[in-house]
Length: 98
Image (cartoon, rainbow, N blue to C red; front, side):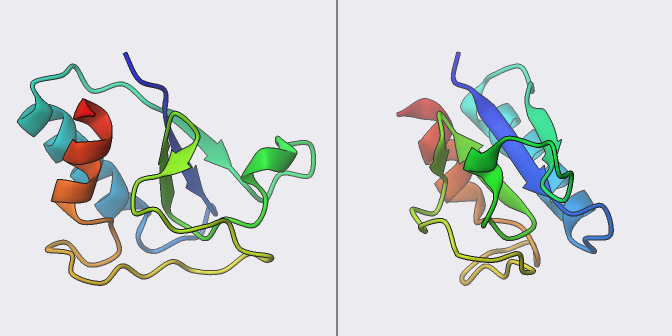
């Protein structure tokens, strides 16, 4: 099973969309939905998660869209997605199954 992590800011308006897209991706991949969520605004959170926008989904430590970590906190927008505010479904499925 791959390690799936959802990185977010508590007030992120796209957090719900990211969760929905994750559920869809797990279903399409034929996998039981399981992921860990991390509030990247917490000062004692893992340093490896700092610099990612919200929401970001990592699979085995890599951003599902291939985007690099940034140098500051920001809202995240995704191009070519069918669900605004969430990564494209095919990117998620690919990350979960390869």
